[in-house]
Image (cartoon, rainbow, N blue to C red):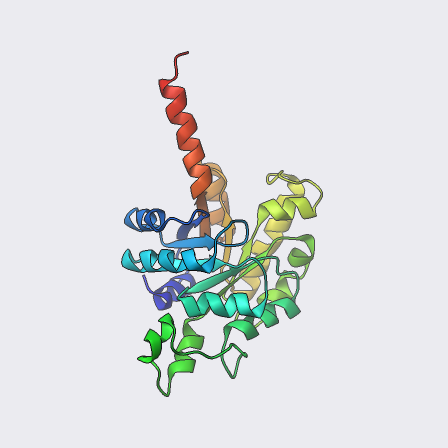
Length: 258
C-alpha cells in the first residue's frame, strides 16, 4: 500500500486496521505486513525508540506493503518534519487540544504554500535527490498524511475547530489519556469517556473527516461493531509488547503443572 491509496481509502470510507510497535524490531513490522494489516504506528512517544532504529522499520514496512506511520514524542516541528524525511507516510501527533496546535502541525508537515517544513531533497522521499523536480513540493504536500490525536477534554470540546483545519486528514481519539483527563484514569469504558467519544464521532459526520480509535478487545465483536457503527475507520487493534505478554501468559498457563 502506498500513501495515496491510503488517503483515498479513507476518503472512500474504507476501514483500515493497524497496530502499535513499541519494540525496535523490523521483523515484527514485516510480520504485520505478511498478516495483511493496513498500517503500523511506530511509537516514539512512550518508548526508547530513536529514529536510528525507526528507519529500519520503515524499510521493513515498505518491503511488505505496510503503511508506516510515526507517533512522535511531541509536536515540535523538527520531530514532525524528520518523520517525513525518514520516509514515514503519516504522523500520529499526540495531544492536539485546539486549532492553533493543529495549524502548527500542518505548518511543520507541509511545504510552501501550506507550511514551512524544512527543505532537504537528499532524503528517502526524494530518492536522495533523484526525484527532485518542478512538482516535487506539491507532490510531497499531497502525500503528507496528518493524524491529530485528540486525547483530552479540551481536545474533544474543540474537536470541530480542529477538524476544520485544512491539512488535518484524520482525527484519532485516545480513550486512555482521555479517561485520565476526565479523572477516571484507565476506565476506558466509563460513561463520560463514551460520551466524549460519541461527541467526536458526531463531529466527524458533520465535517466529513475520517476518525480513528483504539480497540481494546477483539475477542468479542461488541466493541468493534459499536465503533464501526459510530463511523470510526482507522482502527488500532494491537500493541506488540502487550500482545507478546498475553501470548506468554497463555503458553505458560497451558504448560505449567496445575
